[in-house]
Image (tube, rainbow, N blue to C red; front, side, top):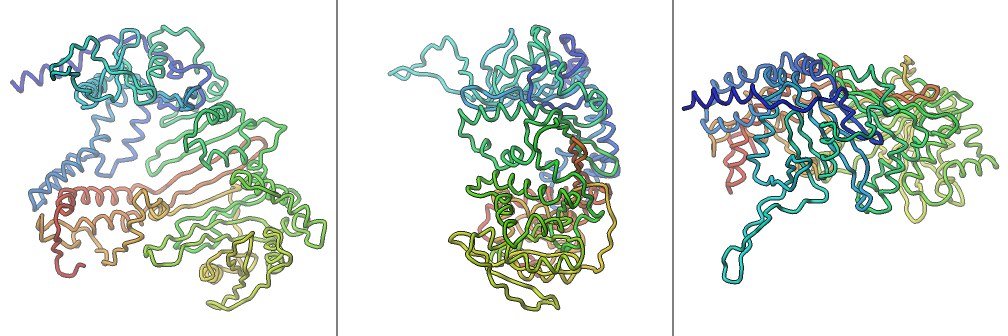
Length: 638
């Protein structure tokens, strides 16, 4: 019976119905007015890139690695965890990657916003090409998923939503009432699925999947996004392996404003939208596109915006002309999760660029009252020549992210800002500027009187900044041609003491450069995403050098490595070997470009994946521990 079932299954997979004629261009599946678009248009090349990326890791041969682990498992109950670990590794198996090559492509788009609710209308289309297995998996999901219900048809093709079972209506006597139409009502805005031979679509509503299917079937004669001026200039970039994306930024801005009038959704009030609006000026963006690609030893994300001349773009002005050091940290503390340096334009344009950007940030934050440029203009009328004399001396600013303390009782972490001046005399001159700047920003009658103390052989100055009814301590120090400022006095002293003077000046190619330590990214997550528990309840146990040295449980699964220790190993030790994520940004003419990436990733990735697998093997023990009142720790653990 099993033999004949296997033969029948293979026959089914190799004999799918003939689909409608595939579109020559994936963009033909979406309307010409599409606001944002992304695609994997070269599945074969993308599959090869993934295979090369995972080569040398357990993802390349999870079958062999899984059975190596099975040979070493002591507690039989760990097999359940091994199964969970093995399931996710199948997505990069040779068979899955070979099947990816058979797809025609995958495309996604935001086509607009609902006029009544303000919700975005979006759809993801998978054109199956020669892949029968992908269609079989879709069919299996729509058939076996518990909450999937058929809610209607589009051109004779069923559409599905997560509606669940509504039960049978009964009369007063408890007898079932006849139901002439058992089809549940369509939801206005929820995941909607359509599957036809050759095509699988997931959309935000029935209308979204309907439009994609009609275009796929050749029933929609209107212009498609393939003819859009926002897509045509990027024909060559779309041929590359990986993910390509583009957007009509100006059109998106217009539709966002309209959506905000009919919707109170929190995401429409996001500060990120406000920053883009005031710093970039979306109305000026003529073209925006980019890609995400895998290399054998890392990955790269690039984006490029072409702006129309004749308008003000504070971000372009800020990033045009200056060049950062190759090391974008400028001597910031090594235990920082990350740092980002912005090199300001040439001296004659520097003050205006800084003030325009500061105005944009203030507007994005909803600041009411005089903007920084207004305050600077007022100061220039007197003896404090901020924009005329002092701002032109600031070559760059480095923003250093604070190390988040794991102990909830520790003092709050404070960011650090390092300003690089034209020279050492300029830095010394800025010691007198800081109190005047505090007076200007706070509106105080006179400048606060600074006090100084010596910490780690560094003279640290401090003053009380009092904007409105509040007050806060500001600390600062100089080191060569740099001015270090923070609300954390000890951080200022530590940064200044660690700086090398004179500083080597090796110029890079970008106006902005940043690095984020991959191993410390989890520290930047909000408590709602799991980081808070680690900060509030620090684990003081000493980490083992190797997985094999991790302490073992006595119960409920004897000889299983302690899940808590393995979780910490995954997060802190194996991630610590990951190379940093780097960011570069530059303005040139009317072009803004951004590049984010990670290199030399292969070996640390392999170590992290193995540690993660071992952690997942202990999931059954973790689940059982949650149901126990008493936890018997081995000797030597707390």
